[in-house]
Amino acid sequence: MLVGLSVLSTLGMVWLPAWVPPTSALFVVLLGVFVLRVPGMAVLCAAVVGQAVAIQVADLARFDPGEGVVLGAGVLAAIVFVRTRDRLGLQGAASDLMLVDLRDRLEAHGRIPPLPPPWRVDSVVRSAYAEAFSGDFVVAARSRSGTQLEIVLVDVSGKGQDAGVRSLLLSGAFGGLLGTMPPEQFLPAANAYLLGQDWPEGFATAVHLTLRLDTGEFTVSTAGHPPAVHHHAGSGRVERLDTTGGPALGVVESPTFAVHKGVVEPGDTVMLYTDGLVESPGADVELGIDRLMGEVERFVATRSGGADAVVAGVRAGDTDDRALILVHRD
Image (cartoon, rainbow, N blue to C red; front, side, top):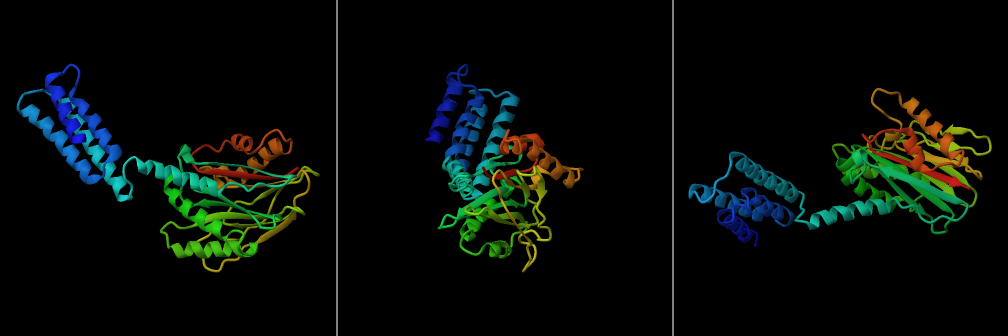
């Protein structure tokens, strides 16, 4: 059908040159990009180029040099694009729908389960340069008894589309691990899984929070991740939780992860975040953490804003993936 359409386009160039310019063949090539794989695209491009050369040789229509260059560049770009997509095992317009579905699945893994009063969770995940995929993702689960909530915030090496596939795979695997084993075994199991993947760039940082919804008792462990923050409503103090020492996931075998224990009192907030909020080129990460803690005091302590307001206040820019989770007890 597309070859036939290219023939009609060529006839239009000959019989109705005022209405059908030579570059109209690019429209046919564009349609082929949406629906064809490499063999079909090669046939279509050969037909388009062959017809263009034929009418030039027969002096039935004339191409300006610039029009010929644009047509040739468009055909070449179309073949390269379709070949790249074909190597990924994707076909036609349906491949875009598959990518959308993968992105939606990644977001679904990060949905916080419904919580009883007085608990609520405010979260935001933003990808670098507003791309569709982020190297930061969230996995959450609530125990069958409903008394315990677990949240894991992960920062995969890389950013945007480069990290999107690894994020999707890890979010599914970590979601399967979460809630199926004692909390202290989660990070070692996640580390073993990541080591087993044998990726060239296979490390990730993570922070793991467990929270008893009946008592407010919580534990936090980190794997190469920035420290969690606890805002104490009673005193107004913003505390950086010390869980240093745990290496990033996928780096060493049999690591040890420090555990911080505490209690979320009424009005308190526990904050988890990724390094995209506190790191910037040429700046000290400690200053970035201090700035973030200041925004917590500004918005969270005064209840004048949530996760979006804190992220906006930090002004970290969009050169890296950013994620923030605020766990509140009203």
